[in-house]
Length: 159
Image (cartoon, rainbow, N blue to C red; front, side):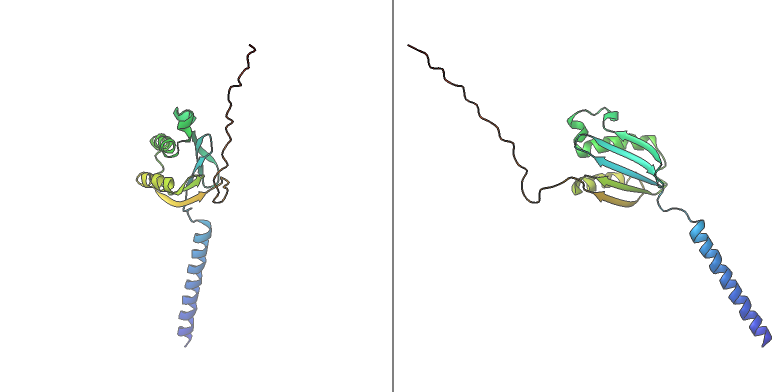
């Protein structure tokens, strides 16, 4: 009987030690699932791409102006983003091996899917988030600017 109790106490002690080591490993020594965050931000005048670590420290920054895009080329959404991403991916090698989160700001859904399809071949993505910050007017169309039609005034000449 005494031998049975000792064996059970030993088994309980082993299970408790295993559980404590599991908790210690899972809370203190675990690796982060995502290592970097790619922010793709589209404003009305420019296209910006930031690469940050998971803690928020900036690693890389590119804008459409840095890639020699001018005026309307900076806001043409899929083309500007793809040219910036092509330059970004040629300069960095850590995207293939480490998991990355991608955040889209002010980008339409069909353009997001097009860019993701191109990115999935080159980047190991773990998380995708999308934010729309442009205000909208419901279903109403945007108010059109009135164009004043000016006619030349006729000068009456005296005869």
